[in-house]
Image (tube, rainbow, N blue to C red):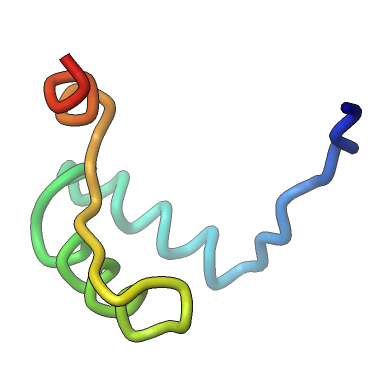
Length: 62
């Protein structure tokens, strides 16, 4: 199976949000993560969300 390469569709708004998170120093916690979970849960993609980082996922898998 060949999966074609696709560039992400990122605009100025997404870049500004990422920059704000990086500048805040809070990459995996704080209000922006909670807001992301709330916003994503309100879409048709999920009834419930909980964002994780790699360490948390590795701990849950083991």
